[in-house]
Image 1 (tube, rainbow, N blue to C red):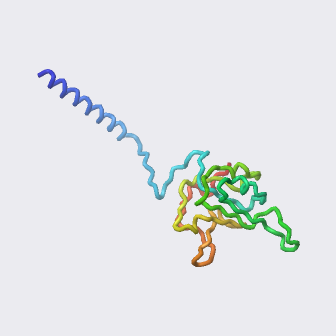
Image 2: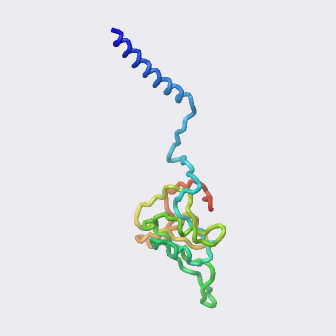
Image 3: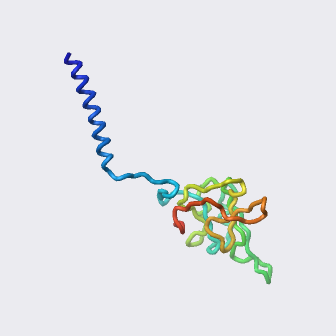
Length: 170
Protein backbone atom coordinates (compact mmCIF):
# COMPACT_ATOMS: atom_id res chain seq x y z
CA UNK A 1 0.00 0.00 0.00
CA UNK A 2 2.85 2.41 0.72
CA UNK A 3 4.33 1.60 -2.70
CA UNK A 4 1.09 2.72 -4.32
CA UNK A 5 1.06 6.06 -2.48
CA UNK A 6 4.78 6.56 -3.17
CA UNK A 7 4.12 6.13 -6.92
CA UNK A 8 1.17 8.52 -6.79
CA UNK A 9 3.29 11.09 -4.93
CA UNK A 10 6.25 10.69 -7.37
CA UNK A 11 4.03 11.07 -10.44
CA UNK A 12 2.19 14.04 -8.92
CA UNK A 13 5.53 15.66 -8.07
CA UNK A 14 6.77 15.13 -11.66
CA UNK A 15 3.60 16.69 -13.09
CA UNK A 16 3.90 19.66 -10.72
CA UNK A 17 7.55 20.21 -11.76
CA UNK A 18 6.52 20.19 -15.41
CA UNK A 19 3.62 22.55 -14.77
CA UNK A 20 5.92 24.89 -12.81
CA UNK A 21 8.29 25.11 -15.82
CA UNK A 22 5.31 25.75 -18.11
CA UNK A 23 3.97 28.47 -15.81
CA UNK A 24 7.40 30.10 -15.52
CA UNK A 25 7.84 30.33 -19.32
CA UNK A 26 4.23 31.37 -19.85
CA UNK A 27 4.84 34.58 -17.90
CA UNK A 28 7.93 35.58 -19.91
CA UNK A 29 7.65 37.78 -23.02
CA UNK A 30 7.18 36.06 -26.37
CA UNK A 31 10.19 35.30 -28.58
CA UNK A 32 8.16 34.46 -31.67
CA UNK A 33 9.12 36.13 -34.94
CA UNK A 34 6.31 36.64 -37.45
CA UNK A 35 8.36 35.24 -40.32
CA UNK A 36 7.20 36.66 -43.63
CA UNK A 37 7.10 40.23 -42.37
CA UNK A 38 9.81 40.04 -39.69
CA UNK A 39 13.21 38.38 -39.95
CA UNK A 40 15.95 37.67 -37.48
CA UNK A 41 19.23 39.43 -38.17
CA UNK A 42 22.04 36.85 -38.34
CA UNK A 43 25.51 37.23 -36.89
CA UNK A 44 27.96 39.60 -38.59
CA UNK A 45 30.17 36.83 -40.07
CA UNK A 46 27.17 35.17 -41.75
CA UNK A 47 27.64 34.48 -45.47
CA UNK A 48 24.39 35.45 -47.12
CA UNK A 49 23.65 36.43 -50.69
CA UNK A 50 26.43 38.04 -52.68
CA UNK A 51 25.82 41.66 -53.56
CA UNK A 52 27.75 44.01 -55.81
CA UNK A 53 28.30 47.77 -56.05
CA UNK A 54 29.36 48.88 -59.54
CA UNK A 55 30.29 52.37 -58.34
CA UNK A 56 33.17 51.19 -56.11
CA UNK A 57 34.47 48.40 -58.38
CA UNK A 58 37.81 49.14 -60.06
CA UNK A 59 37.51 46.18 -62.45
CA UNK A 60 40.68 44.46 -61.24
CA UNK A 61 39.37 40.89 -61.91
CA UNK A 62 40.73 39.61 -58.57
CA UNK A 63 37.30 38.32 -57.54
CA UNK A 64 36.99 36.42 -60.82
CA UNK A 65 40.42 34.83 -60.34
CA UNK A 66 39.75 33.96 -56.68
CA UNK A 67 36.40 32.23 -57.34
CA UNK A 68 36.89 28.42 -57.27
CA UNK A 69 33.50 27.70 -58.85
CA UNK A 70 33.86 30.23 -61.70
CA UNK A 71 30.48 31.80 -60.99
CA UNK A 72 31.65 35.42 -61.44
CA UNK A 73 32.07 37.12 -64.81
CA UNK A 74 33.24 40.66 -65.36
CA UNK A 75 33.43 42.93 -68.39
CA UNK A 76 35.57 46.06 -68.24
CA UNK A 77 34.21 49.40 -69.41
CA UNK A 78 35.91 51.05 -72.35
CA UNK A 79 36.49 54.67 -73.18
CA UNK A 80 34.21 55.45 -76.16
CA UNK A 81 36.72 57.82 -77.77
CA UNK A 82 39.91 55.78 -77.52
CA UNK A 83 38.48 52.27 -77.19
CA UNK A 84 40.83 51.47 -74.29
CA UNK A 85 39.70 49.74 -71.11
CA UNK A 86 39.20 51.94 -68.07
CA UNK A 87 39.14 51.08 -64.35
CA UNK A 88 35.36 50.72 -64.18
CA UNK A 89 33.11 47.75 -64.69
CA UNK A 90 30.60 47.62 -67.56
CA UNK A 91 28.87 44.34 -66.61
CA UNK A 92 29.27 42.13 -63.55
CA UNK A 93 27.53 38.75 -63.30
CA UNK A 94 27.18 36.24 -60.45
CA UNK A 95 25.58 32.82 -60.97
CA UNK A 96 24.01 31.85 -57.64
CA UNK A 97 23.44 28.33 -58.96
CA UNK A 98 27.21 27.76 -59.03
CA UNK A 99 28.25 29.87 -56.01
CA UNK A 100 29.31 27.92 -52.91
CA UNK A 101 29.48 31.05 -50.68
CA UNK A 102 33.16 30.54 -49.85
CA UNK A 103 33.82 34.28 -49.44
CA UNK A 104 37.08 34.19 -51.41
CA UNK A 105 35.81 36.85 -53.82
CA UNK A 106 35.11 39.21 -50.94
CA UNK A 107 38.54 38.62 -49.42
CA UNK A 108 40.27 39.23 -52.75
CA UNK A 109 38.52 42.57 -53.37
CA UNK A 110 41.00 45.43 -52.76
CA UNK A 111 38.47 48.30 -52.59
CA UNK A 112 37.34 49.91 -49.36
CA UNK A 113 34.39 49.45 -48.90
CA UNK A 114 34.25 46.11 -50.71
CA UNK A 115 32.57 46.18 -54.10
CA UNK A 116 31.47 42.54 -53.72
CA UNK A 117 30.34 41.31 -50.32
CA UNK A 118 28.08 38.84 -48.57
CA UNK A 119 24.97 40.47 -47.20
CA UNK A 120 23.02 39.32 -44.17
CA UNK A 121 20.12 38.13 -46.34
CA UNK A 122 19.68 34.41 -45.81
CA UNK A 123 17.06 33.83 -48.45
CA UNK A 124 17.06 34.79 -52.07
CA UNK A 125 14.06 33.84 -54.19
CA UNK A 126 14.43 32.22 -57.58
CA UNK A 127 11.44 31.30 -59.69
CA UNK A 128 13.47 30.15 -62.71
CA UNK A 129 17.04 29.33 -63.68
CA UNK A 130 17.32 32.73 -65.38
CA UNK A 131 16.83 34.48 -62.03
CA UNK A 132 19.84 32.68 -60.55
CA UNK A 133 22.19 34.68 -62.79
CA UNK A 134 22.23 38.25 -61.49
CA UNK A 135 23.76 41.09 -63.50
CA UNK A 136 24.94 44.53 -62.41
CA UNK A 137 25.78 47.70 -64.28
CA UNK A 138 26.40 51.21 -62.95
CA UNK A 139 23.16 52.46 -61.38
CA UNK A 140 21.73 48.97 -60.78
CA UNK A 141 20.41 48.28 -57.26
CA UNK A 142 22.40 46.02 -54.92
CA UNK A 143 20.19 42.98 -55.61
CA UNK A 144 20.93 43.18 -59.34
CA UNK A 145 18.82 42.36 -62.37
CA UNK A 146 18.31 39.16 -64.34
CA UNK A 147 17.94 38.49 -68.05
CA UNK A 148 14.53 37.12 -69.00
CA UNK A 149 14.99 34.98 -72.11
CA UNK A 150 11.30 34.92 -72.99
CA UNK A 151 10.82 38.70 -72.99
CA UNK A 152 14.44 39.44 -73.95
CA UNK A 153 14.83 42.16 -71.32
CA UNK A 154 16.50 42.77 -67.96
CA UNK A 155 14.10 42.58 -65.02
CA UNK A 156 14.21 43.28 -61.30
CA UNK A 157 13.83 40.17 -59.12
CA UNK A 158 10.42 40.06 -57.44
CA UNK A 159 9.55 38.87 -53.96
CA UNK A 160 12.81 39.85 -52.27
CA UNK A 161 12.40 40.94 -48.63
CA UNK A 162 15.73 42.36 -47.50
CA UNK A 163 16.81 42.28 -43.89
CA UNK A 164 18.42 45.71 -44.21
CA UNK A 165 17.87 48.50 -46.72
CA UNK A 166 21.60 49.07 -47.23
CA UNK A 167 23.37 45.80 -46.43
CA UNK A 168 26.33 45.91 -44.05
CA UNK A 169 29.74 45.78 -45.70
CA UNK A 170 32.83 44.41 -44.03
